[in-house]
Image (tube, rainbow, N blue to C red):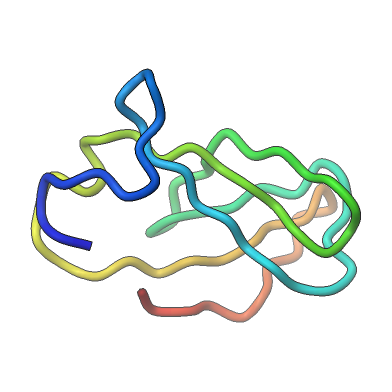
Length: 79
């Protein structure tokens, strides 16, 4: 990801982020550097979220986690 450059850009200026895994239950949220993102789930193996442009406006890396509805979090992934 380049600073200020959208990735998988959406019409509203946000970027789409997908997470693939196992046992991803409905109501789970993708978190980017601790910030919960608007997240949609499909079949238990993938989640998709919209990332606001202000999150990728500055240089740096992201820590991605998934938080389940009961408050548990997955292992983190640096991106």
